[in-house]
Length: 273
Length: 364
Figure 1: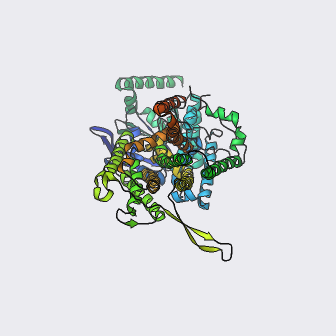
Figure 2: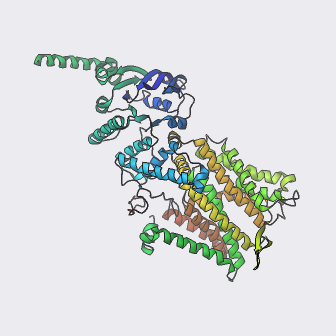
Figure 3: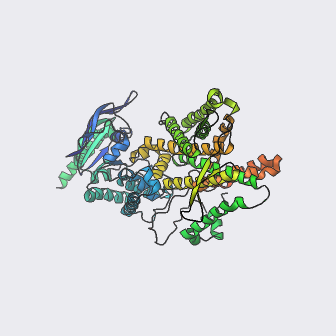
């Protein structure tokens, strides 16, 4: 079953076509990646899915429901959550408060209830705090709960952003370069963590990533876009062999050179056998 | 060269004592008690002192209202005086000889708050998509429009002659006698002295402090602060930014309206010039000096900006210089305000040992 269906979506900024007639389907409980050179329109696509941009043409639907006319906060309530390429935490709030804000769509008490502290309000706040502490522990940040977010170390900020996006109990998680700026060890940990999110919580994951080791390691489907157009789609093995992908990344000359190297390599392999 | 107030306080009052809820509420009760019995003391210039404290309290109330808009939700509103004026004129028109309408203060007070809140939402609606500087300019204009309307709608507001002879609030209270059934009709007290308003303002302050404090530490307060920190991300977290912006405008404006109505009743007469731009600027300064988004900060800011100039009155000629100097020193020593907003410590459950995480914020 498809969680997300992106059909024929086009997004323009003035004369620039950022996304051009793009079709992507994301299967339930899968890990899918979107890769492409800088400026290919990957983050723009995320902004379209989350309702931050409205595409000029086409439709995006989530479990069959069109997201076209919904504002970002409604889309989040449906069960889509995201992280950002350049970390965007609520810098002056504490770690726990950041997670509590993430739970916002799940909490139902009204403004009046918040002032007079009805029993329902108290229960809800108490369980929200309990859940926030649990998530804090889940991403390995216990002990940092009362830190102001801007004072956290870089890796911790990345993990907090994920905890915050998990707080709304999403069905689909959009991760925008989750391992950017991380060292190899941190990258491995993050890769494992993302895999765990799908394996243990059943969350469908769509990620944008530049680190090919991560992409090839965990994705089931990879979509490559360049200049807003889909140029390839398939399993990691298929994408690695795709000539157009190599061209897009390295240029035509390099691509032909590379394929020469690959052929030589396979000849050598044959010779050894 | 920031001065570390935290470590200074730690030396006078150890943290274990300060964190004790009984100690805190006891201290607070003592402060309230002091202010409750203060007017009964006979000391020179008694009336002047009471009046200055009354003004300070009024500005704390206004500061708390504007703090919701600027401090919590990050909506830079330079026209807050408009809501104050709307509250004041509502009471002045509904309880004076102007139209010969004499409604009860207790009835008009909520009406003034509601009208101001509606005005807040109405000014909020068209500026929903504006941010920062643009919002500031529009609200600045709104504040001036209200003042100019008050000056020019002579048939309604008497223009710059102002509205005079505004009714004093009348407090009805049950009187008792020593014999059964004890109840002895209703006593009638006209609230017309500075002391009466001193008490009225103090009671109202406690109410406003209570409400803003509860809002600050709730889902609503978190949504506001998230909105201030990053509006786009806040919306992405499922926060209905339209609703929470209008709520901040409405609640903030309502508190301003209440303040205005009390002010009109206290003064007995109001003039458009009571509501000029400098009132807005003063209230903003109170918030900034106290620390943006900090409730105790508003109290401290009000002491610094309203009480201090009056205390310094005896140095009449050097008053403004002294005052300016104090501000400069303060902004160098405490650039984030005198009492920057502190977010709650929530990681440990109540009753568990409190481990104070060193956040390194103070650079100590």
